Length: 228
Ligand SMILES: Cc1cc2nc3c(=O)[nH]c(=O)nc-3n(C[C@H](O)[C@H](O)[C@H](O)COP(=O)(O)O)c2cc1C
Image 1 (cartoon, rainbow, N blue to C red):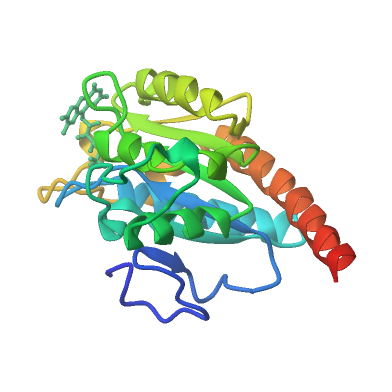
Image 2 (image 1 turned 180 degrees about the vertical axis):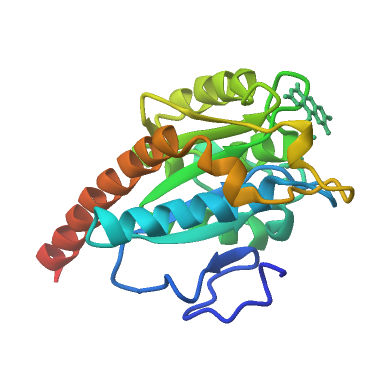
């Protein structure tokens, strides 16, 4: 199903999907960034399965967070085309503003990344580079996937996100995808099963983000209350 075709409580921006059954406007929102954009890909399947883990954590351990899929294929940013560097804070183009707002509206982020030739996908780097202060102190964790879990991509991504002062969980989650997991159409036969093999590390990584996101949302709430 297209990220845009689902009913949402408050459709904020193209490619940003609050899953209807999880949506609750009062809960902290965890953005799950789909870092691969190929026409036939597994990134969205992995991200949806990760969103299910976030939702399960909410039911089991947390008072509530809402997973929000941020699908870079749907968001469709061009190559960075702002005239001023992102550190200027100037967001003059509609797509930059929308992306900036989408990230500003989440309380934490899970970066779901494929591994391409030992690195993470170019569209993910581009999307990261569009912003600057929006990333600072944002709770985050890295979920990589690939034949060996995508750990080289995760290491590179960690270097970049650390530079941007994302408040990263110490341990990444690496999902091993084997050839038997793929169907003839080159998508996953059963994403939940693939992700389930890494449930422990995944719960730890997204659990950390959920916990920090709740603290951040509470701090934000009390800052707003004081300002009123
Ligand atoms: C350009 C390209 C490079 C790849 N390089 C790697 C790699 O370095 N390590 C790896 O484990 N898999 C690699 N693969 C295989 C991917 O893990 C696999 O295609 C996966 O489905 C990619 O994620 P996506 O479908 O979300 O794009 C590569 C795939 C592509 C398309």
